[in-house]
Length: 296
Ligand code: MN
Ligand code: MN
Image (cartoon, rainbow, N blue to C red; front, side, top):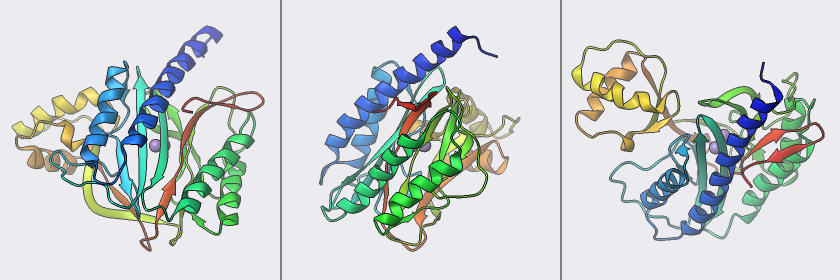
């Protein structure tokens, strides 16, 4: 096990990553305006993380309206923001120690309550977290706040633990009350992320894919796939964007690696009834009597 000093060393890296995410998220949120290029905001986020001495833990997710997550621009994306509900989800890591946070920006001016419900659910969850709390209690707290607003939580999206080079580690932190659950312990690092909708309360996979991650390395024959694998390995097991990769024979190489089980894809996630979705997320370190929010 870790001694006291090395735990502090690790937590310090999480905190540095958290500070970078907080700062970049604030700047990026101010760039989300009608007419602004979506690609420009994503690239700003990823470059700003690198300029501050960290690396993106995953591609900047910019998900609109009924899309919950896994949406990032393509390399030649020409889309601009219009009067949408915009989720900005940002992750940075220092030596594999990840901070993950998200915010929703309402460009329509009509969905303030949906945004507020996610923020209040997140606040309430943070207020019940301490050493010994069960993830079931955290989920029930999130669900209660969201229902009080008259909306639904997304039942098949959850918060999660963070571990070195693992953007989604155990335990799962549900957005609804449930039986059982895991117990959070002092110095656990977890991301809490309520998703709120006026739709069905569930997401399903769409057709668009711009994000992948390495599953397991295997020998592949196709030269383009082999070359791509060398590129991909630098992201370790963390998700990467298609637009980060060299363009030559890219589609065939990605298809080949996915078919061989070397990489997996992350299709965009859409609300099942095409309801609007808001999201709020912070990464916290669990403490004896509470928790420390590292991405605020
Ligand atoms: Mn996130
Ligand atoms: Mn997350």
